[in-house]
Amino acid sequence: MSDRDAFDPAAVSAALAVPGPSAGAAWVGFRTLLYKENLRFWKVSFQTIAAPVLTGVLYLLVFGQVLDTRVEPFPGVRYTAFLIPGLVMMSVLQNAFANSSSSLIQSKIMGNLVFLLLPPLSAVQFFLAYVIASVLRGLAVGLGVFVVTWWFAMPGFAAPLWIPVFALSGAALLGVLGLIAGIVSDKFDQLAAFQNFLILPATFLSGVFYSVHGLPPFWQVFSHVNPFFYMIDGFRYGFFAQSDVSPWTSLVVVLLALSITSAVALLLLRRGYKLRS
Image 1 (tube, rainbow, N blue to C red):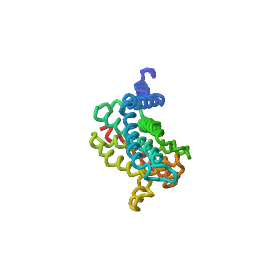
Image 2: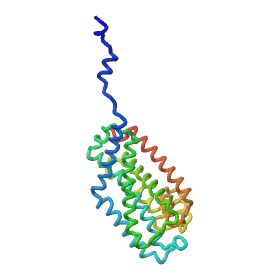
Image 3: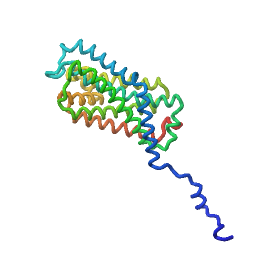
Image 4: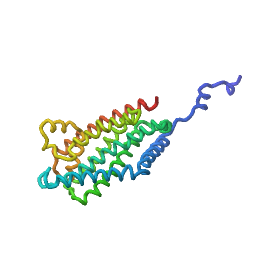
């Protein structure tokens, strides 16, 4: 038998090998997933954007009318003006969480999660697609709340650079928390427990409707261990250059919380926890 006819296992293996996905193909998958996540909430914008905006306006009408002339949270700041940044940030946070968590749990229950796992997406790309879409929805709702409510009392822009910093970091943090909640939950009841017993209380006890300086000592301590307080307090600083704590302290706390939750979410995604079973 000639050398030409000799069997070469390495050559056969190379000929039969299926080429792995290229980096370009993976990023196409990322862009497609991001587009799908944005389209998902935008197609029902009356429910996902308009309804939360209306809720924020109702909070302003109720609390602003009752307390505007009775409470002065910061020196020289009307209560209605004080309330607007809190309502904007609350809307951003709640809707960023709702976007990633509801999308993932729906994919699980409807059985189409497998189609999201088939493309050659890395854990980081999967993570970024969900979090970016959550940030965009949160910012869209927050902007809507601000545009509608600023007619009642323009809060001003005393330190405007802090506004996008805390809006983006806060929306990203809640988008990551929503992703974690969607991963560990198997049904809507479990997801509702996250929202009702964690996100909602933490948001309402974070200083949206009041300054923590007016609270009893115990509740002041409780507020200062709540990361949501730092997101809202730092965001409000951008409007009034007044806050309960330094915006730098708030930024450190928010970025630390974002780093920890992002690490947890990426670990769960890499292990395929409750996703590939």
